[in-house]
Image (cartoon, rainbow, N blue to C red; front, side, top):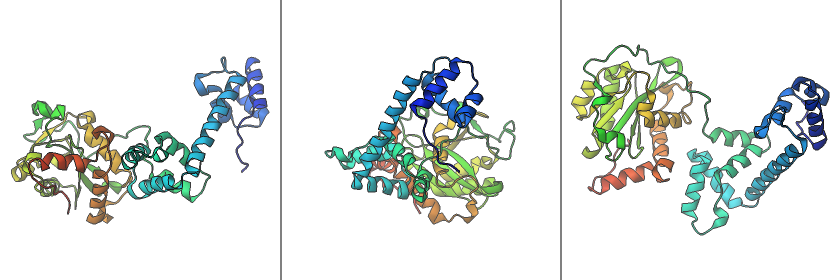
Length: 340
């Protein structure tokens, strides 16, 4: 396979000339011995089209981009301590470039040489030559999906759960996120739908509790969730919002054990549990689709829980969930206890 070479000025002038003569993109690609996707990308980049494309403008844009790539690479090539810091956060904690950049400001407030833009981190990683380092670091980045696949939880959404409380009956204070202690719950389904991991997220602090499950039976889920939630301080046990999956059919058992009322979102309305949906996406970075949770130890699950709660979050002004959680409950001299 021949190495890819970027388009040069002569090729761009040929593209511009042939477009003016009504050549198709396929014809241009064939005459320049280029892939048609290369020509298409070149013509359409920068809000251009086949009628407005100009070689000179395209060349200047390409030179600016090349200069930026080289600049970004030089910054980290010359800053060994900065690069070591970034790689450590990526490898060990799976932090995003944005989280790393904000943490650098906290750790080195007066050292501008240790400050960097998130986009510079992304650019440097992606311009690394192909190899094991690039593969490893890109795998540490959060995977952005083009779409979210509809998740089936083994029950038609039209089937009502007995004695369920609608989200419309939930206290108004929950929506405002002013009062902590309101949770959202869900399951992440494992390989072949044969295993699952429970997830609970507190709406105000974004504190996450991961719940190992032996199976997806409603009674097992209710008792396992209750076992974890019982460790929380009283003021952090106010309500939980869930979807209408059958695994929460024993919600009254959960309420009897914990004193926490469960409210159910409307069918096919994941935005009503947006905090949990977003957190599940973060968890998938550690447990991707196809994970068999029956083979994941409790230690591994709780390690990921600690990593999530120790991440700076944009929604918290880049404070960490466990810091915000402890700030709230320490005002009443209560210690955080959601681990093992």
